[in-house]
Each structure stands twice: as structure tokens, then as C-alpha cells.
Amino acid sequence: MSDERTDVVIVGGGHNALVAATYLARAGKSVVILERLGHVGGAAISAPVFDGLDARLSRYSYLVSLMPEQLVADLGLNLELRSRDTASYTPYEGGGLLIETAEGEATRESFRALTGSDDEYAHWKSFYDEVATVAAAVSPTLLSPLPHVGDMRDQVEMAIWTDLIEEPLGTAVERRFSNDLVRGVVATDALIGTFASLHDSTLIQNRCFLYHLIGNGTGEWRVPVGGMGAVTAELERAANEAGVTIRTNCEVDGIVTDPDGVTVTGDGFVIDAEWLLSGVAPYILARLLGDPLPTKPSGSQFKINLLVSRLPELKSGIDPAIAFAGTFHLGESMTELEAAWEAASAGQLPAAAAGELYCHTLTDRSILGGDLAGSDAQTLTYFGLHTPYEVLPDEAAATRAYEQFLAALNEHLAEPIEPLILGVEHKTPAQIEDALGMPGGHIFHGDLAWPWLEEGEKPRNPAERWGVATAHPRVLLCGSGARRGGAVSGIGGHNAAHAILES
Image (cartoon, rainbow, N blue to C red):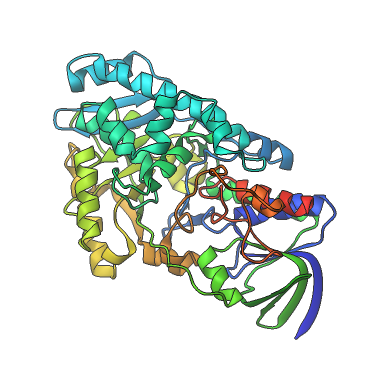
């Protein structure tokens, strides 16, 4: 056993750990990152998924919205995040609802074709204009100590505050929109990685919706050129240049705390540090600390990565390059979403797939090499909703879920997708847990929290002010389990680092 001392030790080498380490090292702290896998980045990686095929897919996380431009500038990251011309396309019998990123006449005409008038589009515009005021208030606070809920509430109209923050989102969606398909397109942002009814009284769906709409004040989800691995590569470069020590294949098996610091142990090492930052889920951290275990999170997404020889034609006649460039909704009317949730809540695999599909390579073909780069080949990424850990217990259940996805997609195609598939892999929540160490395969490490201080909350120290505190004064959260964690943002890492620097 070898003894070592450092200012800060970080357990888990995800993207947030790299962010925190870089800020701390640039401030003169010695920092060691311990990662059990053979690479850093956690879920924010690219990988050659299909044997013999030169395609490096964003295997788990795949789009970027919440990463603040200020953080990118602070760290000097050389990243290109491209906008998609299509925000979403939702096929239905006889047509499809097209929503452009920069909404124009095509969007208006698409609403009219679905609903028979301009009323629903007017409601859409009004709702998202109001949502934008909430994003404008919340987004600038994400890299600062937690604001007070009253300060946020005072900056927006009470009607939209009530719709998003105080009442179940389903109530607002049903009141503001009359078309079932439009309601579902709005609601789906509340369900990414979150297993809930749209009428859930806990409002976890509202919190998920908020995080998906506030990124950099616009809520736009952009494509990282080079894949998600390009984001991690830049963060790793910045950390190395700052002098951070990164150790992979290094699994931690215990953490001991005292008022002055922490001791971290693993196979062949003992490290003493003044501070420990946890990039692993709070459930895993509790086990390492020997604390009572909280309720284990349960992930709810079924991820499929496909490589196809070309994009399939659609029954609606729309150009596939338009339909698949953004979010392609399957089985996501509000009625279908609620039915899927009800089935899964009863422990049953939903009768039909509900989820969304998108094509990275329509925006960025750099992830394809060799013969694929010059061909018509495309990648397709599917994110299935309401498929929790408990309803996909084995490969047989996963196969059924995959077959449901194919059926849901083929329903809207002029040709079956199967002959076009060159490669396929799927990841259930259980497989995500096994691969990444995320308990229950929960992509946010647990339910998201409001990004502000609630009424009566009075932070007593920097860790509480920044939303990164644990029950142990020398142990802080820097990953998705932090108060403003979740998604590829670096916010948890930034805030944990700044809490230490304030202490």
C-alpha cells in the first residue's frame, strides 16, 4: 500500500469531474481524479459501436444544451456545437407535424394541416414565448450560488410560473393545447430520463421540463461536432494542461472522513486529501462512505444506436433529411405517453414504443470514416421513454422492446427499416448501470431538483450555497447528483470547484 496526499481527490472521471479538476488546478490546487473505467468521460463518450464499421457514435449522451457558453470560454474549450434546421418532426396517419428550429411558414402550415386552423400554433407560440422568460431568468444563475425562489418568481409572469413550477405540467398542457399530438410534443421534454405521469403531484416532470428548456437561455439542443467524445477530449486536454493527475482503471472501495479531510482507499492505494468531490451517484457515494443507502434510483430509458445504409422514405412524402435531422417523435401523443406510463407503473412493458429518434450524421458526418464517409450511410439514435429498469429485466424483454421500436417506426415508413440496418446495439437501464456504474441506469443519478433555494432554506456554508453539499463537510457532489446536475453541462463540476475555492 502506498500513501499519497493531495488537496482534492475526485472519485469518478465523468465530464463534470474534468471541469471541477481544471478550475481547481488552475487555482493552484493539487487534484487527482480516480476513474474505475479505462477512460474518462462517463456517459459523454464516442465509441466504435459496430465491429468492422468505421463509425464512432455518441453512445450514451448525444446532444448538448445546458453547458454554459461562459464555462466553455472559461476553460478555453475548442468545441463546435451545430444547430439543427429541424427542431422536431412527428408523423401521424396522413401527414406529419414539422417544427423548424427557426420557425417559419413551413411550421405554421404544418400546424394548420394537423389541426385545421392557426389557433393551435398561436397557442404554441404564446406558450414558448412565456417559457423563454423563465429561461432568461434562470439560465444566468446556473454558474452562481443558488438564487432564492422568490427572486426567480419575481422575474416572470405568475401564469407561466404556475404552469411550470406550481402545478403538474399536464394541467397546463391540457389547458393550453387542444390537439393530443401537439400536447405530446410539448410534454415529451418533461419525460427524458424521468419516469412520471404528466400529472404527477411531486412535479418531477416539471423539473425535467425546466432543465430541458433553459440551456443558455434558449433551450436549443445542439450537435457536438465529432460526437460527444469530442467534448470529453477537450475537457481532458484542459485538465491535463492544468496539471490534473488522471488515473483510469482505478476503482475506489472505501472513503473515510474526519473534520480535516478524507482518506480514499482502493486496490493498492491510499490517498489523503483535504477535500473529496464525488462524480459518482449519491447512492454509490453512500455505499463508499458506509452511510445508510438511500432508495436506489431507477432509470427509465431504452437506448438504441443504429447504423443504416441510407435513410428510409416516409409515407408522408417529406424529405427524410428534414424529418430525421431533429427529434423524430414516435408514439408520443399525450394519450400514448400516459398509457405507456400506466403500463410500466404496473410492471408491464408498454404495449407500444414511445420515444424519439434523431440522426447525428445529417448535421455532422465527421463521426463516419472509411467507405462509410462517402456513402449514404447514416446513424440513428433512439431514446425510449417509460421503459424502467424493472420492466426490462433480461435480454428477452429488451428484444421485445426493440421489436416494438421497429414496429412503431415502420408504421410511418414507405419501406421497412430492417433491410437498411447495417449495425444495431441497445442499452437497457440495467445495461447502462453495468457499463457506467449509474445505479438503476438513471441518467441523472436520481430525480432532478429545482435550481434554486426553496422558501425557508438558509445555506450555512459555501457547499450549501452552491448546491453541492453532502452530510460530510469535506465531501461535495460534483456530478449529476448535485443540485443543478443532470445532462452534459459541466455545471455540477464548476459549482463544486467554486464551493471549495470559497471555503
